[in-house]
Length: 322
Image 1 (spheres, rainbow, N blue to C red):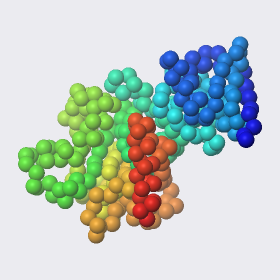
Image 2 (cartoon, rainbow, N blue to C red; image 1 turned 180 degrees about the vertical axis):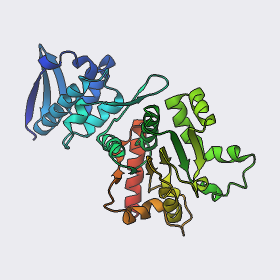
Image 3 (cartoon, one colour; image 1 turned 135 degrees about the horizontal axis):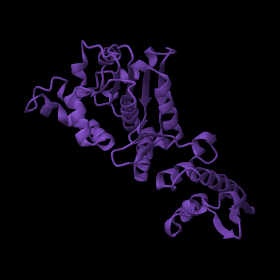
Image 4 (cartoon, rainbow, N blue to C red; image 1 turned 30 degrees about the horizontal axis):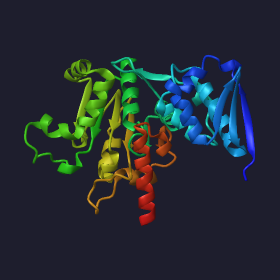
């Protein structure tokens, strides 16, 4: 039988933070108790955690991390709560818990920030490198954070243009079989990019910069033969590039430019006889200065909590199949 234990936390230094982690109608508190399998009570300035030795140790670590995180946050949302709880027992960087630097503010005034350790490493890599590869599953913020960094660099005058591209593999890059003019042909493939830009910049601001040529959204096929100076370039869905297309894109980089390549190598839509350029480039570009690969995982998923469970279920299924 597991030994029962009581762990305590002095709430004196965290008097203002307690309400943030308890949540409305004690919702967060219930989540914490269920996650660790403990009971938590408050008495005077002490928080008491009751359960088995291991569970109370884990719960104390998690609650302390939450209290530290709450010091510089207006609230502890569901994503932050679940992430910190799930990272118990790992080497969770204190600077991440306490530091929540804002990358950019969206048109609605929403602060765009890193919500996981992986995202923080990703943003730091973009800052210090000329080319950054971000590889990871859906929902890890690969494209959205790159967009925010691009808009921030543009607004600060660090670049004079933002170029966003992705392969249109379903139409074989020719786009000739779709009805309409060029804009109408490529729109279905570029819609996720537009959605992110609209959320960050607003439709009117985006259209103004697009008309002036300061923001360009185009399929990858239209990057050939160009040299992009003083630009922030993002290649999205890069797992659907061929090795030749990847080489073509990477050699577009001009002076004063920065490039971010994002993709999920588990979601390749190329024909079975085609190799993904994103998979191959990892073996080709090793130990090159000012170029870095960042790998994001399930713990970095910041969409609905159900998305992470779906990713986990698919990975388990695929591993069982193998």
